[in-house]
Image (cartoon, rainbow, N blue to C red):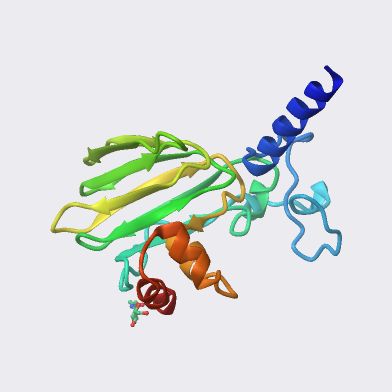
Length: 215
Ligand SMILES: *[C@@H]1O[C@H](CO)[C@@H](O)[C@H](O)[C@H]1NC(C)=O
């Protein structure tokens, strides 16, 4: 019985470590002190009396990101790095620009659920449920439509129009993190051994080495 409880406890602990939303703040705010030498989970606080409005502010989100890249999209993230006042508040924001037919490739946020609203254009969006179902839940969104990507799940967007598209997304972490699947699997430093990827993906070695060369 005690063994079972310890086992269940370990499972609960490991899952909360692997996929956890930000903790609630214990004070009104904790504006990040970028020069602090203290290392902790989050960022150290500035003295409250020195905090100013600019600590809670960011400008420039009206500007389109540069989508001239291989995937045809650009994410402009406004997290605790850009707004020190977001530290400990468990929220951030992103602007995503898409070239015609551009994609935001399959990726996951280890620390955040995302709620995305289309401001311009039309997007195909989707996320995949965890094993064993791996069900794809996808939809075409038009201007004004909102979609949710649950924390930790692999998701993507694609501009399905001939014009530009743009979306604004809220994320439930001051530091959502991004794991882009292709970059993580094929572009790790150093590389994952080719034989591991050959067996995991069940494809020829030449396909793996070519893909690793791209990333
Ligand atoms: C956009 O990025 C491309 C590729 O990096 C670069 O050549 C181009 O100058 C950039 N455009 C602007 C307006 O910054």
